[in-house]
Every structure is written in structure tokens, then in C-alpha cells.
Image (tube, rainbow, N blue to C red; front, side, top):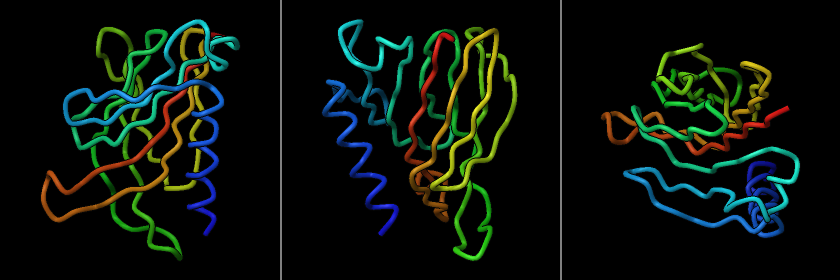
Length: 141
């Protein structure tokens, strides 16, 4: 029930912020549409995406993430963590992080804060069946 509430809250945030939906490659992405929306007033950009291994979200303010893999089950709920590569604008891997569904990872790079929130994952038994639904936010300050 908490996961459904979390998804409903995210969708409500999108509606309030005037977020639009786009499809890029295999990734379904919702992104802030420009300087007039609420998120950009704080110097932040947010993308929602369903990523398969190798798909990328961003770049925003010079930072992007790429889904590297979906890990093995962990914890009492047997949740599968999403494993992301954090990339700079040149595509250099800055770090690799694991984020369990329902959790948020925060980091910083060159004065910019970024947040990766994994909403759901599917471990799959084949390469195409693996995916992660996530929110990726980068703030200039």
C-alpha cells in the first residue's frame, strides 16, 4: 500500500509542476518542461523513467545515470536493488550505486546535488525483462 501511495504522490507532484511525458528510445520519460515549471524555480530538474540495462536518464546539469543492472533480492521483502552508473557530461562513470525500491540515494558532483529514487524494479530472467522505474533529480545548488 505504501508503494502505491508513493506513486500516487509522485504523479500528483508531476501534475502540480506541469511535467510532460516523452518517449526516448526504450525509456518512457516525464521531464520538467522548462523555466516556467515549479521544479525549475529551485534550480532542479527531474525525470521519471522506466529504464532497461544500458538505458540512460539525463543529462541534466551535466549529470546522468545509466541502469547497469538489477541486483539479487535483498532484505525481508526480497526487493531487488537497481544498480546505476552515475555519469558526467563526457560519459565517464563517477560512481556506481545500488538503490532499493522505496529508497533514495543522494550525492553531489561539482556543486550539484543529485537524487536517485527507485520506485520499482523487475529482475527478469532475460536482459529485456530487467527494468527499473525511477526518479532522477539534479539541483544546481
